[in-house]
Every structure is written in C-alpha cells, then in structure tokens.
Image 1: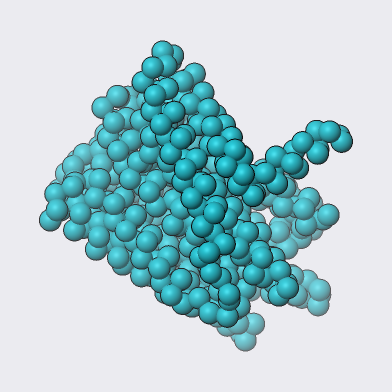
Image 2: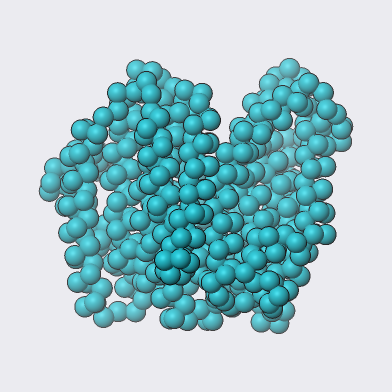
Length: 498
C-alpha cells in the first residue's frame, strides 16, 4: 500500500506539471505566436530544457537514490551527500558558465539556418541569461533524488509545476510591457522558485548540504552508474536538436510550429507508454508473470495508442486551435502546426511499443540493446528527416515524417533482438483487428461530425474527443474485445457494489 500511495502522489504531481506546462506554452503562443521571437526563445531554451529532461525526468535518480539510501542505512548519508553535491555543483556551474560565454557558438551549432538573422541575434542574447537555468533545474533534480530517498515524492514532482506557473504569470503580467525580456525573466524567476519550493522540506527532514570535494572509490562507482543512465536519456533527447537544426533552414516560425505540435504529441506518449512501461518493469521481475505481463501490456498499448493516434490525425486542426489559437497565434499558424501534429501522431503506437519492449530488456539487466535502438532511431531520424524535407521537397512536414520512419526502424531493431521470450504475434491479432475496425468507425463518425457540428472551438473540440472515445470503446465492446469487456465488467461490478 505504501508503494501505491507514493505512486499516486508522484503521478498527480507530474500530471499537474504537465497541465501547467500546456498553460505555459499557451501563454507563449498567445503573446508571441509563431514569430522570430518565439523561434529565438525555443532555440535558446533548448539546451537548458534538455538538462531538465535528462536529469529531472529519470536520468539522475537511478544512479543516485540506491547509493544514497545505502549510505543512509550505514550512517554515512551526510558524507556521501556532500561528496556528490560538491562534484555535481562543480559540473553544472561549469556547464552554465561555458554555455553563457559561448552562447553565439552554441546557437550557431543548434540552429545554423538562422545565422546572421534577427532570430540568431535574439537567441544569443536570450541564451546568455537563460543558460543559468541549468544550475536551477539541476539543483531541483538533485533535491528530487534526495527527497525521494527520504520517501518524499509529491513536492519534488510538483517543482516543475511551480516553474511553469511562475513563468506563465510573469509572461501574462509583463509580456506586453517587457516584450521578449519577459521570457527571460519568466525562466529565471521560475528557476529560483523551482529550487526554493524544495528547501523547507529538506530542512524539515534534517538534510544539510555541505561541500566536500572528493574523487574516491565511491564517487567513481557513482559516476560509473550515472553515465549509462544519463546516456540513455541523452540519446533520446538528440532528436529535439536534430529537428531544431533542420527546421532552422525552413523559414521563420517553423521551429515554433514543431515545438507546439511536438508538445501535444508527447502528452499521450508519456501518459500511456511511460505508465505502462514502468508498471511492466516491476511485474517482469517475477519470472512466472513475465510472458503474461508482456502480452497484456502490448495489448493495452494497441488498444490505447491506435485511437489516440487516429483521433489526433483527424482532429489535429481542432486540437491545435483549442490549445493555441488566440492572441498572436493565428488560424494560419494553426493549419501549419496541425499538419505537423498529424504526421507526428503516426509514430505514437510504434514509440509506445518501443518503450514497453525496452522494459523486457531492462528486466534482464540489458541496458545496451535499448540504448543501441535509441541511437539507431536518432541517427535514422536525422537522415530520413533531411531526405524528406529537402531532396524530396516536403519541407517542414518531412521532419515529423522522419520521426515516423525512425520509430518503425527502432521498434524493428528491438523485435529482431528479442531473446528468451516466447512472444508471438498470434495472441495480438484479435486485439489488433478489433482495434483497427473500431478506429475506422470512430474516424468516419468524427469526420462527419466535425464538418456538420456548428459550435465554437472550445465546445466542439472536447465534444468530438469524448464522442470519438465513446464510439471507439463501444465498438470494441460490440466486437467483444477481451480487455474492453473486462474493463466494463469491472466498472459494473464496482458500481453495483460500492
């Protein structure tokens, strides 16, 4: 029960952060739309934000928490914490200083297509201030690891929500008067409060951070564990840099369109695949449940991601308009971002299956194969995106097209390397064809409804989403899809016996 309690708290903390993250993006779109200012900000914020993704979303904790917990049990917690904290701060402060001093070179490397333009000059100016966010976000990630080891989960999980809320309020209050400088101010204020929210809870638990620079055997072991963990997360983040790099050659606004569309695409990907993969990893530790757990997880992914992908493709324009179309974000901007979201959505089932199959390898202690698969996906994405966008002339639509093709290649690599499992395609075929047939009915209904429904976008979009979901799951039930029927029986039983 304790695990369930902490898991629920962590989930709601992350969910709150995600929701406020969308509000943050909506505020940027409202004030700056898809302009050279928003392009410059997303370029400048790319590298510091990547540090948040790598360290704050799982790259640091797997190496730090077990060793710190062991040191606490042995009465060496303060000593170990001091050594890691000193080395950690030395590294992140150095990165922030180097990034600030070499901002021009870094921006030229990330987005060479905007070189010698107003966008480049503005991105460099912003980066010189925003690079200090690396220190704040790294500190927040460190505090998350410390508090998690002390069984405190909600506050560190909600720290990013504090950043998003502070950034949004700063932008809404000062956006008109300060212009692009409000973006810088929002990042810095948000970073400070993101760190500060953890401090009372650190003091409450009697945690004191001292400086003790050392490079002994224990620190070497920590770095040995940290490298592959951060490496796995880091490889996955390279795709964002590839998209930014290529988009910089495709004109003003394209970097912003990609960012806005990708943010919506990542929501179902993270909520569905990450949740299922994390639960599966725990279940796979029990050998007798391994085959059944993997089979069930794949069926769940098929059932959930196929309608999510189909719905985002059909309703891409409505979803983008619902989230972003206000203020400086025009209908023309909506059409551009919607086309990218539709193509991104093709990748959803394949990336989700990749995450679930990765858990199969992790449960065997094999972290190398998923890392190779990630590296193959990133390299192929860059190649495919370049070919589609430039030689084949698809422009910005070619970038998410490259993401789709790379997701197929990465999943194929894992499937070819599956060993010591009796996983066969036959058990999934009934679920697959019933899900596809149900998706077909949902798509037809949505296309008819969205053209005939006379309502404002804020009523129309939620109605279409809920109606599509209802039609899909009703169709699955009528086709007697096993998992859907089990879910319905569970709900009926719960309602009948409160």
